[in-house]
Length: 172
Image 1 (tube, rainbow, N blue to C red):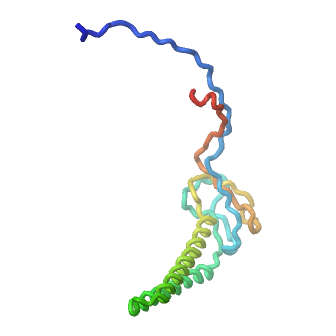
Image 2: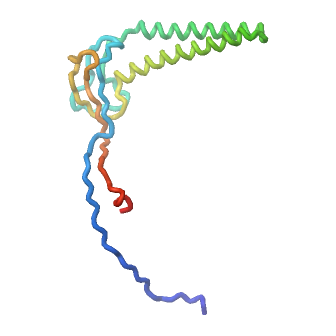
Image 3: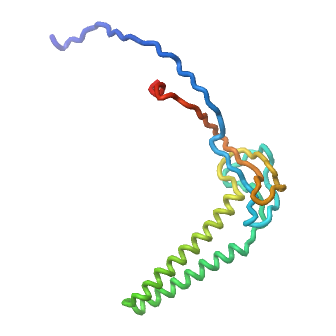
């Protein structure tokens, strides 16, 4: 009978490995410094305190934001959109006119640039006033911060450990 399995034993030899000793540094996974951005307007106040836990999207800093700049950028987008709309109407009336097509392409580029400027300005406001991730506040200069100086830091809740491992230890 070849179907019978042997009820024998398998023997394995276990080698002792030296333990892996690693030293490293535990640090927050992210730290973001919020500097006084006077391009947005005047720094009015901070809405958080040292050691306070915040969630992503919470308002941290209050600026007296120069709304005129946003209005100017919005107007620029609207004006560029109106020019593009007019270009489309002109092309519909004269579909074989290559000059109108070239003008449309130039005006579409101008519209894209205007939209990009507006979205960069909005992003700059958001990056300078709202929490980018969950974390804890560490106050620096608070409202005494001069232009470009650190107002506060946002320190992530998660920590990471950084260490070095020799290529000889990677398989362990």
